[in-house]
Structures are given as structure tokens and as C-alpha cells.
Length: 241
Image (tube, rainbow, N blue to C red; front, side):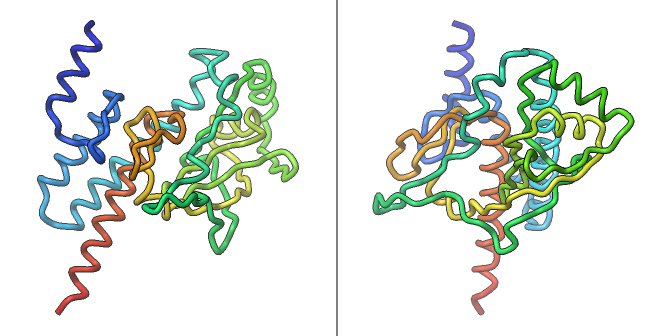
């Protein structure tokens, strides 16, 4: 009853709703309302971007730390999430035509700095993690192309680890090591995919595409869209005499 009451209070504010979709994540809507209020309080574009960049970076730091620490809080949490999609693999445009969400960037590859970058990792076995932690204590992580798989999601600035979970987790914890990652661009999805922090939706039909793995990913996605929108609108206004 308390949860329902809180949700009703959040929904009744109607401060930030994407495409009139129902908001089901309290943390998500609070984050987006905070972003909206912060942007509305500033007139200068540079200051708006500074605020957005700061919020996005803090949430990225939290995403990395939380994904790494989850196995200590719930050993079996990630066992059911290893094959789950990090982001919808396709979207439907305004005409209902199915399009692939992913496209390789021109470079196609990017190095991951385990000490600095935002990395979503799902170590699912505490025994394996324990072994790699003790092994890497006195050694650097050696990048193994046949073992260490990951994807970099541009422009979100997030790496999703897809194999080599435990050795990479240890490298993140020790803040040492680099691995080579595939790099994809999901910018084309911005007009066609939205989220309420719990599910990814088709913007045009409101149909569900897939479940959100972590609400922080959804927040970063929507804040990155906001940033892109601000930059594009400013560029368009400056193009007129």
C-alpha cells in the first residue's frame, strides 16, 4: 500500500513523462525530474551541458560500482541476467519498419580503461571472482582476445562486458588493465526508443521492447538524449541569420 501511495504521488506531479508513458521507477523519475529542474534553472547552454555532464558522470560511476558489488549482496542475482539484452537490438521507425539498433562506428574498436571507464559487468560466481582477485593482486590483467568480449555503446559512454566477467571484475576493482572492445553507435535509436526506467518502449506505438537491466542505464540514455537535443537545437538556431 505504501509503494502504491508513493507511486500515485510521483505520477500526480506529472513533471516529466516521456511520450505520456506511465513511469514505473521512482528512482528513474526522480533522476529525470532533477535533471529537468536543473536545466530549467539555467539559461546558458554551456551551463546546462555542464550540469548534464556532471549528473551523467556521477551516475556512470554508480553504475560501475553497483554492478561490480551486486554479487556480494546477492550471489545469484546475475545468473539469470547473463544472456539478457543490455539494450534493445532493434526498433521500429514511424512507418513501422524494423531497424537494427546497432551500427559499428567508423573505428569499430575502442580500448577500455578498467580504472576510469564506465563498465557494466555481471560477475555471477563468487568462487571464480575470488580466484581472479587473488591472482591479480600481484599482477596486471592480461587482455585475452579469445576470452575478453565487450561492447562500447556510443554515445552513452558505457561498456557492457560479455565474457571474461570475473577477471575483468577484478581488474575494475584493482583499477588496472585495459581490454579492446567492439564499438557501436546507437544514436539512430533516440527518436524511436524511450523508457520508463523499467522497460524499453517503442516511442511510436508504446509497445514494450525489452526489460531494462538497471534503471541507471535508462537514466544515462535519456540524459544523453537530452544533451544531444540541446546541442542540435542550438546548432539549428545558430544556422539562421
